[in-house]
Image (cartoon, rainbow, N blue to C red; front, side, top):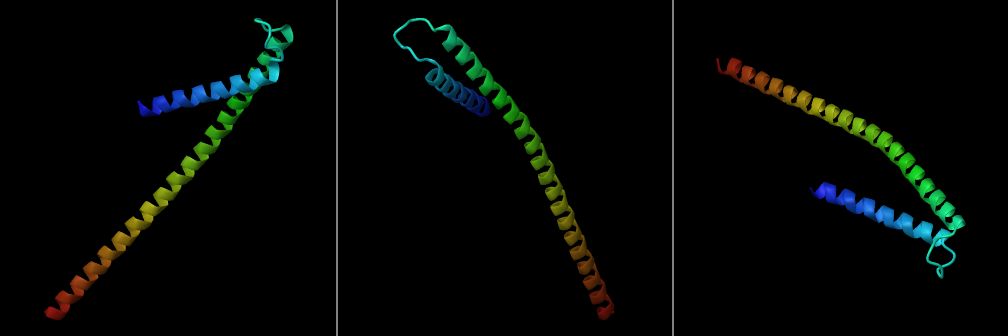
Length: 106
């Protein structure tokens, strides 16, 4: 639930930033109630550009994130293999020590 709320918050912040930027860039006359054709066209183009840029950035981010996750998995597997090898080596040394102790005790 917390993750969903964060996503909604992020979306609303992005929406508000885009709205603010496009409004400030496109609306010239605050005395009229309706937007002019030029203002409507400018706002449409502005929102379209931001939407396209956002989609491209998300695609790149997802690709990079996939690579990062794969690297992390490989590092974790390598660390796990190293720890397993060390544990096996310690076990073998312990067995060798026990065997040597038994031989000298006999």
